[in-house]
Length: 143
Image 1 (tube, rainbow, N blue to C red):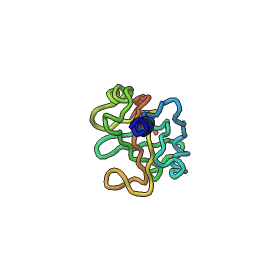
Image 2 (cartoon, rainbow, N blue to C red):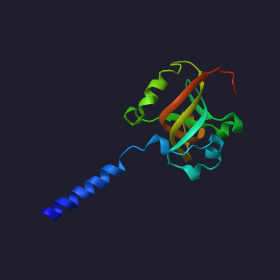
Image 3 (cartoon, rainbow, N blue to C red):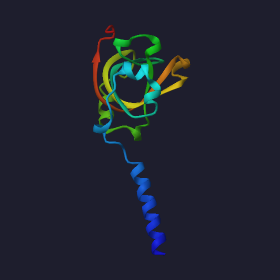
Image 4 (tube, one colour):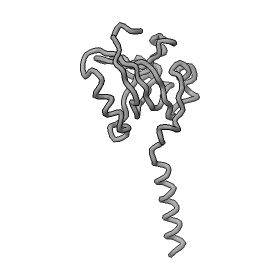
């Protein structure tokens, strides 16, 4: 009986370690252009990216002006609220709630490729953000 109890405890202890959130300081920072050039290298892995987020009605583009182009934009969406880091909720409040707007952001999340994503399947990539670490609103006419 003691052996069975010890085995179960070891099994559950291993399971809880796998579901622990990843510490933000160990997540690699990747340039947005590198991420889009090699999406399969980073597919479904947590990465940190600095990019521009342009959003509004039926639009949510994540891109970098250094590799600007519609085929280089990713549809960005936020993960479910219970999966967001604490600072994301605070930083989301800094964004313009309606209409069109643009912000330079630092986000942590995962890139998805190989399908079509976003509004009317208009994007080759989707980035699901679990943390919005930094946000700075910029003028809409900024590239």
